[in-house]
Length: 146
Image 1 (cartoon, rainbow, N blue to C red):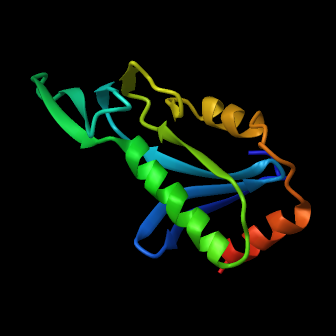
Image 2: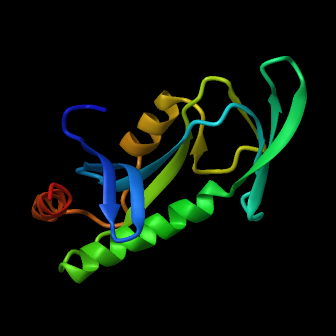
């Protein structure tokens, strides 16, 4: 990320553990990191996603994971409430990053990325719905730095 963004790793707010929170002049973003290996069959409306994998000895098998978009929504809600409770009313967005190079997303929904370049582009090209003043961004940073 360019230097005018601040990245906080392993942010805990109540029960929510956020992999990365990125704060910049265009907003606040949660990046949920999933290191999944295999072919991930995505469906933003399903509770569980299936993963086709190849075992160490070459055998194929299927596993599943909870829909990470649902977890991301919960984390966004949790962080937004925490900030609002501290007098900061700011829109928060986010994305899911499949960081394992051996993952392949099928039917990749909006908000899911499998390259760090896509994540950076999503954040840097994000247009906030309303202007964000620098004082508000500094207040967010103060609360996350604790």
